[in-house]
Amino acid sequence: MEKKRLVLWDIDHTLVDFSELGAAWYGTAFTTATGATLRVHPVFGGRTERATTTDLLTANGFEATEETIQALFEALVAESERHRHTFAETARALPGAAEALTAFAAGGDVVQTLVTGNLPEISRHKLVPFGLDEHLDLEIGGYGTLSVHRPDLVPHAVERAAAKHGTEFAADAVVVIGDTPNDVRAAVDNGVVSVAVATGHYSAEELLAEGAHTVLPDLTDTEAVRRAVLG
Image (cartoon, rainbow, N blue to C red; front, side, top):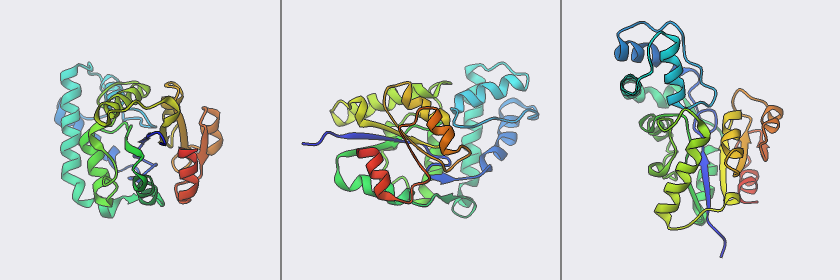
């Protein structure tokens, strides 16, 4: 019997393209959470929301207390809620994303969830308009609330998946799919498989240099994605 595999998907520039849409929310959310005007803007690049928020507060002269971080999280979710009715028109699913998710769901031997820097609520908001949540177990993912260090999200997702499915996932059966060096490092630092896609701001060469086991130009070749994940 073939062992189960666990596929941990990134969201932005891997499954969907929201361009810089989310960055526009930070000004309003920052003012809601702190009462001040945002002057130094956030840096993303595959970082977790906790890391982004912590640095954002510090750069704008605030102490990154847990209370203030949580207030900013809540304000960001509220902004996403306010705009989510526009997502189907203002964003897009990346080519091949739906087909890849469906292909892995077909056999029943692959568990799919997220390892993403996004907040849990915003993750759902970004996926649902395109039906990309259908084959993902969003309850067992590793989200950006958990840690400033993206590699910490991987074991969290693995542990929750193992507990829910009653099986241990060997390191070579866990695959992180993402588009940034931080996605690659999250896999490599945990000794699991990295499949990178050059659909974001980083080239195939940059992703390979970080240690990705496989780099694909995109997700359009479903069979190539399957080979990269299943071996």
